[in-house]
Length: 81
Ligand code: SF4
Ligand code: SF4
Image (tube, rainbow, N blue to C red; front, top):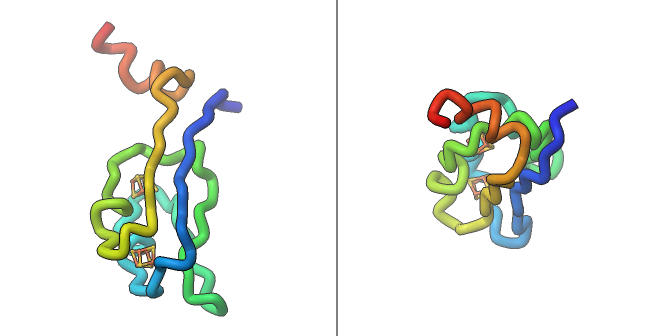
């Protein structure tokens, strides 16, 4: 279990269902709700903070908020310490 407070904020009211975020996420954090035609953010602890989803969203519906103090970040960057 990774101790993390990573967050992805999603403003559903701005989303137009274009699927760009869903197609752009390379680690499968973003799933697709076909009924609602909206992304579903699953397993946020696996997010790699590439900001692709946020950059692709032309409606400003996504804000990626990494927890820079978390264990997960430590594991990634310990080689630079
Ligand atoms: S990229 Fe933005 S507008 Fe398009 S589906 Fe994702 S959240 Fe919705
Ligand atoms: S920041 Fe990158 S890894 Fe995280 S949900 Fe968005 S596209 Fe996926």
